Length: 244
Image 1 (cartoon, rainbow, N blue to C red):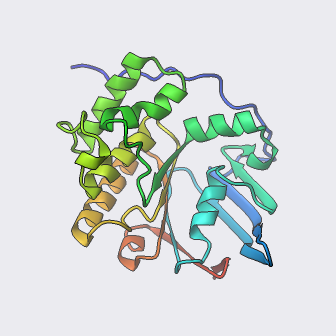
Image 2 (cartoon, rainbow, N blue to C red; image 1 turned 45 degrees about the vertical axis):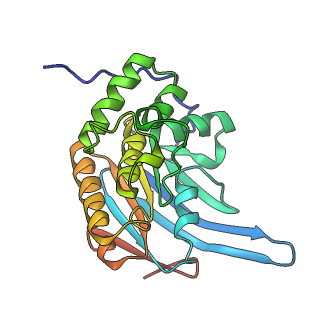
């Protein structure tokens, strides 16, 4: 039996000491405000959230509730106006730009509603891109990418470009891409939003299976009550605040 090759990773992001061991993700009194041309828009208003390793959490709320903004902050894609985010013992707000980019690449897998696949690359190339950014050898990245595409049911689609794939297949490619560097956290932003209900159910089934298999922490932002019901823990967001 062939063993899945181990990815070679660059040096880890620079450390920032945590006051104590705790949850994988610990957001403390997060505020996010955007300055628009004529007014100030406060999207998050003092959100605190702790997520343990291996948890499956759904962030539920209507459009504009702040779900996507919160995911972007938790994954280091954006920075809060105020507050702190501790991730795996590191304070994201204190990391350098380089360290934050390394953390996003190695520790976090992102899955978006719009897939965000590069149209000029085939499925395998899209999946392998984060591994190549992490300086994994081409051979190891390709072997890992093929294994993941087979795992998500796309063994025969590795050379297909996004335009040649259905919406559900594109989302499966995005899931495989999110897993290529074996991250500890998967952030999924409305992952079924562009899919019919049957395909959406298949995608959630797949995410749940992969989470259990890899012991990955999963946070899904959704406005769909059916999707949220699949998670053992649900947090409701409204007007930028967690509803208790």
